Length: 113
Length: 115
Image (tube, rainbow over all chains, first blue to last red; front, top):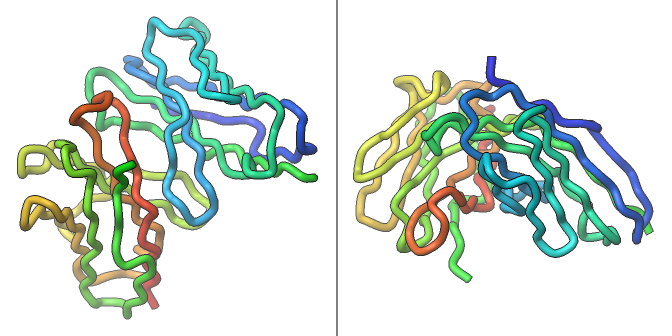
């Protein structure tokens, strides 16, 4: 069964600290992996997209890694800000079909002053 | 920067009624999608639409649902005979065009409440 599992379920950190969110997947065949940020009551916003051949991608203070062999990805947030408080969702696409997107349940990050 | 828009932001309807959720995708995009997110749960794929027809749909997208692109700019999701369990956030997304084919841009969502 194609699954995307994220950990931790929720995380609280102090402003300015770094954190790393994890994503494990069993989706096969793999096409690409994305990390989205979703503010409460809003639509997801894309942070990074990685294909099979990419093992790291950065977008400002966000750095995603991908290990296609172990089927793991991480999202590292550097120097967190209060505005980083949101859910971070890992999404894996299967095969050549961009429509077959499997969503993780997300990690709820809270950044406190 | 162009964005996907959705109306209404919140829709309240009685069980058994029909609702139409509206979306205006980014203008040069070619692929359109509907997703739903029940409160506290994962985002779930409903349907994708390309070249004026459904390209893929999930098990959730049964005969109760239909999509249409009536005028070349709007993209609608119709839910017939709504049920309590249809209460959710419904997100529209679009992709394709000048940017990466893979990148889907989501709208802000419509919160549907069925009473």
